[in-house]
Amino acid sequence: MPVRLIFHMLWVATALRVLVPSFADPDLWGHVLFGSILLGGALPAVNGFAYTAADHPWVNHELLAEISMAAVFNAGGAGGLIAFKVGLGLATLFLVWRAAFHRTHNHVASGIATAVVAIAMTPGFMIRPQIFTLLFLAATLAELAKVDYRPRGMVWGLPLLFVVWINTHGGVLAGLGLAGVGVVAALAGRWRSGERRLPDVVTSGLFLATLALALLLNPWGVGLLDFLATDVTPQVAITEWAPVSLTDASFPMFKVLLILVAAYCLLGRNIRLPEAAIAVAAGIVAIMHQRHIPLFAIAATPIIATAVAQWWDAPTREPLRRLAYGLCAVLAVVQLGIATTAGIAARGQIFVNPWHYPVQAVRFLAQNDIAGNVALPFQWGEYAIWALPSGSRVAVDGRFTTAYPQTLLSSVWRFMSGEPQWDTLLTDYPTDIVISDRNHAPATLLRDHEEWEYVYSDPVSVVFIRHVDSQADTLARFHGGSLRYDNSPLDTSFPGPYQGNTDAEAPFVPTADCRLTADTPPGAERPDFC
Image 1 (cartoon, one colour):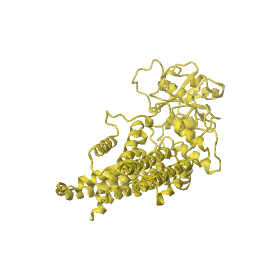
Image 2 (cartoon, helix red, strand yellow):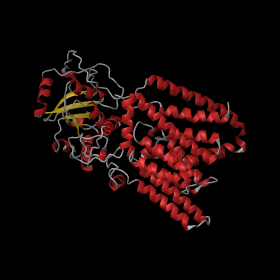
Image 3 (cartoon, one colour):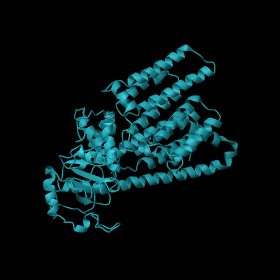
Image 4 (tube, one colour):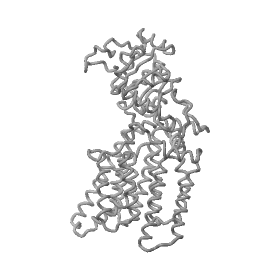
């Protein structure tokens, strides 16, 4: 088997093994729903889905991404979204491979580097708008590298890409920043080597200015740029926005690549200033925010490929090469088998993990037609918008600062964590229903609260109903034992699970043991429906 084929197989098989398994992102329901609204010709200006901030401005910076996702889902369902993700991921990694090969002209190094980068990028390969940023960043850096980060030729077409990017995902600011770092570093390198030409400075400045001006071509103009630069980052503890801990075992591939890039920049040969500057800048941003790890992997590709090439080409590696060829061929076949098995097992479905979402609780509310204003954790909001019965609104969802004021987000966080003034969300807003994660404070704080009635629990969540006129019928049915508690198997495929089941099965009346009370001993056994 030709060497180049082995290492093409390696990175493609690794990519498929990473891309094919598909799990529902917390915001996937919202992206499809909001995209469907956009396809209908409307551009909502306000939140619209929350009882806490219905009229708050909604700065949707993911318009084209959501339109694309909705169109694909409407045409091909969940399987179409999986194919869409796999296609975008393969295109991104092809651009990564091309950048690696342009740098090294070495099929072995390019294949290995791309496979390693694919693994490091795994957290970013979800069905969400960020995947477009990965593609566009890979394209931007690959094009700039082809011209040694000197604006000329086809690279002047990048402003058109940036127009699309700014209307697809806010990660365009990272693209502009890394492009600017590369162009300025290249310019500095030429000046340091004695190539000091004023037209070169003017051309580089004009190019970067053109990229920046392209970002103004969006429905909000400069307002969107101001929002992305100052307000988009939530001021609450969201995991993907948290820094990377350098003292634990999390993100091992990222940390290995970070050490490799740092060592090569300090000790390696044939270092190019723009590549090093881009990788260092991306590494700093990735350490600050976990969600940017895939951007670092893309930015570090030329350095990773160069390091692999120099190691591989050393004369002392000759005895290892034949063994490596065989091992890489076997690894490619094994990963292709894993990807194929995962694809067959999924049967074109996106898995909704019932341990991560309130699947049972929302089914309980829907089957009993219990609607109202629902307070629940951030990450459940867009699932709830899709699955709750008609007439329901949520307190918050994953749109965060794009559709909610920071003061409200802080109130929701205090509510979830039980911090001082935790009940502001209940006293300042007309909350009727609470779906609490069993591990969050409201599951305990509301248990014996005089305004709230505990009506349902399962291994993931707990449901409370408020004693208000709008919920009087629901509470009467609860006390009369006529609410339905369904213990049938769950539908765990997107966009379910609730499909409007109107089965006339007799309602199940829970026993007193299903109720959480102050006298319930810790660890007591409860029926599955509890």
